Structures are given as C-alpha cells and as structure tokens.
Image (cartoon, rainbow, N blue to C red; front, side):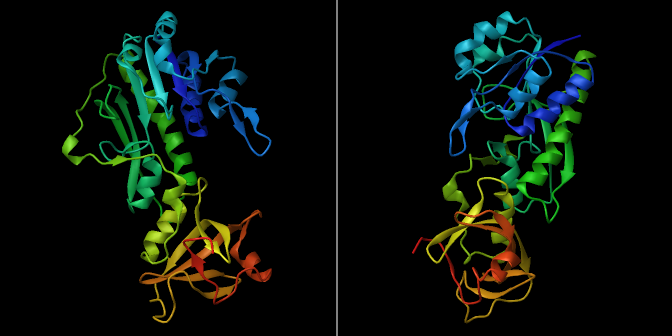
Length: 314
C-alpha cells in the first residue's frame, strides 16, 4: 500500500484525512502550519489538522516554510503527498520528493475558482453548483491535470461555513476514490481548459465592507459568503456591526429610502434599503457584543426604523 504524507491546516482539511484513515490508507505523517496565537490572550494554538493528527498518533511537522524542508520530506520515504487547504506554495523540489506525485483536494470545479477562496467566490458569484476537484499538483496556481471532479449544488441559504462542511466531506470521498484509482494503476487525467479559468484571491477585511447601494441579492451573497469569517460588516451610529445572515426581499425599495436605511425593524428581522429591493437581516453582531438574532437587537432598542447602515464609522 502507498505511503502518504498529508498536508493541510484548517477544519476543512480534517474530514479528508479521516476518510483516508478509515479507508485503510497509510498516512505516515501530517504537515501543517505552525501554532498561532488566538484570542485576546494570544494563546498559542495548533491548527485543527494538527490537533486531530496528534489525537490519532500521526507524526506532525509544522514547517514555517515547507520549501526549506524538501530533503526532510524526501527522507520520510512516502510515495504520495496530498494537500488540502494547506496554505503554502510548493516548490519543484518539494514536488519531486514524492515519486508518485502530489495531489490537491481543491474546493471548486476547476478551472473555475483557482486560488485561495473558491468557496466564498462561488457564493459571491451566485454559482448554482460547485464541487471538489482532485488534481495533480504542478508549480502553477491550481493548474495541474485533474484526476476527478464531483459536483454539489450551492443552496440559496448556504453560507461559506455550511458549504465548506459539505465540500470537506465530499473531498474525503473524492480523495479516497482518487487514491484507489492511483494505486490500481487506473488513474485517468484530464487537462484543464485554461481559457475558462477564473482566479480568486485571498479574502481580506476590506472585501467585507457592505455597500447597500449594491443590488439586494448581491449584498445577501456577500453576507453569506463571509460567514463565519471574516464577516461582512457596516457601521451603525458610529459602531461596527457584523452580519451573519440575510435574504433579499422582492419588493422594490422605497425611492425615498437611502441605501442602508432601515425601513422596518420587527420580530421578523431588520429590513434595509438596497439596490432594487430590501435586504432582510436576520442575524448580526453589534460591536462589543455577541452574535444574536436581529429581532433581539430590535427588542433591545439597538436598531430601529430610520437608522442608517453606513460604509464609514461616523
């Protein structure tokens, strides 16, 4: 049986590793990112993948720069490396350390959404389907030959969080199938059509500022795409408000209402004027507070009709 080194970091990468182990594949080591300070007290915290691997007795290497450890990786004697949301670029020297190749579990239907944030961008773009691609890694950005693809729908209420869970589970199914095909000598690869490629960058906080002058549907997609992190936001009465969930309302916005103006606030949610309609916000977080239902913010008199969600802190 092939010996595998598995590289990843976030929660997304845990389910595929579990699937490989449960399918009987021999994962001899895990590579992940170094522990990072988390929270107000800056507690040094391992990645979710490291925590899981250690609980299973799998040796872990948390290289700050994997490119400096190609010889160490080669010395492990693995046949294959599998990467999943690992977060570091691989050099040719690292790729050459594995005789049977390096394979990546990518959360999109390549060549669509090559890059760092395919799940968020599928939602932002209003894609009705996405999926997982297992590809053989080369030194390009998600440009390698595809071993298999599996589709799944993007539902109207999917957030990046819920879609990530589905794709992580699907990634586990796909990588097990892919490794079985590879072991059996039955792997068939397909070239990507570069002319159809789209690329997505890493999401920054600046990408999360909510502009209610945009179409209501677009605003809601932004809010869902940034949930659970880094969260879409705007400013209310000079304080930051994070948005967790919203849905568009079909009615046309009152021409007298400015973009971002709260036109209704009751137990059903907070209705905000946007381009071509209203955005009904149902979950949010006020600065310094906890996540709550929008209805609770209304009941606590923190949000009322006539308030304005702005793009800048007043």
